[in-house]
Image 1 (cartoon, rainbow, N blue to C red):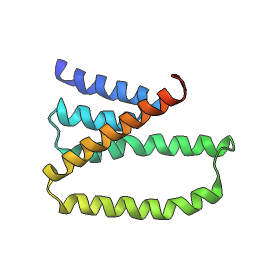
Image 2: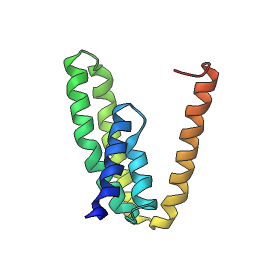
Image 3: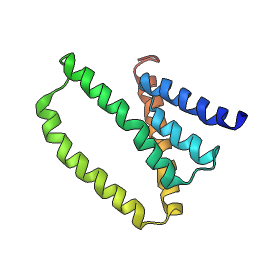
Image 4: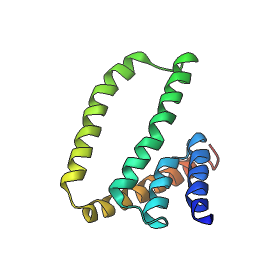
Length: 125
């Protein structure tokens, strides 16, 4: 009965964090691969399934409230979709162990960037 508790708490925490704009999907990936024993590709798939409804709802409300720049969206969506598809195809062609280190470096870079931008702006944003 308790084996569902850790995945449930991980999903709840990452969902709450992503609603605050923290990047809960990345945290979900790390939690699944490090603590739950999920393979990297499976974790990416679950992360995508976790992200799509959140992105769809966000897009709906941004459009409803007039925060969607349609020209930018029209210019960014096609190359973004193509890059995502190319990245997915490449990830299946490359050994998973080769993806872990660049992903770790990406997380370190992202975290450092967020910390440094907060320091430059005087602490809180």
